[in-house]
Image (cartoon, rainbow, N blue to C red; front, side):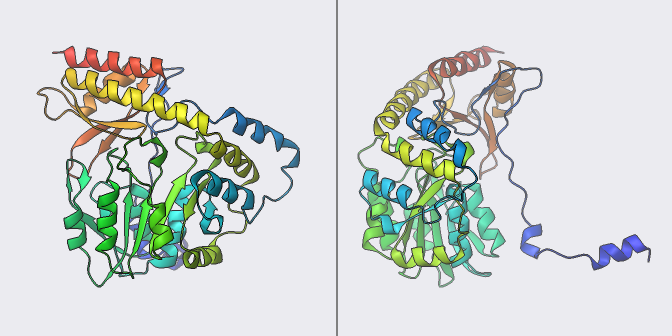
Length: 372
């Protein structure tokens, strides 16, 4: 055996679960030959952060040598004030991704079962795989989780149910009665995690973020983020609302300074600037309505969405495909997200942008649909 072969044979080996995971692939951000493409692939806010949040960011330039507030007290209080929550039940993280990771590390072990929707947030499956848990998928109809099917999948090995509500990548949502039905059908030992990354965009009267369940039961967690409507994706800051017993567990494994100072300062001002957020919500709802109408009229199947993105299907139109549509949009300087959903179909997910960006999408897809 050569020295190189011996080195390979004796090298450290990762856990088997890690080798079964494919690395996350982020949304495309560049087009070859295009200097300034319009990026609509990652559900980012086209408006950016509140001006008040930007001012807060700038104000910290002279104190970056200091550690941030490890207790996250001011941000937890600001979140609680705006959303009428108990600040002692709020915990902040390096994006809601980190909080989901902490939750899974704390409550999932090898051999446990976790139930996800068929089309689910990919990071949830990744974190479950890392823990060696078995992923069970609940069926969907019209891109909505079938509640009865989800509950029928619960076994004595089920430790967790995680639903993104509204859902990513579909943009659909379960109403509060459906969420309550799911919770009522779960054993008290099963943790129900509601990922509300897009909750701020929803304007329907039958939607609820789930925080009221957290105040009433000890097996519900709601996660939220500042990456979407607040326009702070680059700062990586999110929060979760948890029963006090779960807060205690997560605090035991949370890094002491997992949220950076500029992110904390920006988030405090961002969450308080409700007028700014309301204007983005109104803009998004207006464009979701128009995009649904105009794209449907030219023969594209649009999945109705309550978020800042929408899903487009092309498999019902002869001679058209999501792959071709994506390439055509890119030739016009627009970057969508080409996805393969759970049933194997390819679809486009496109972010609602600024007025001119949305007009450009409509114009480009209209040209594509008129091609023979």
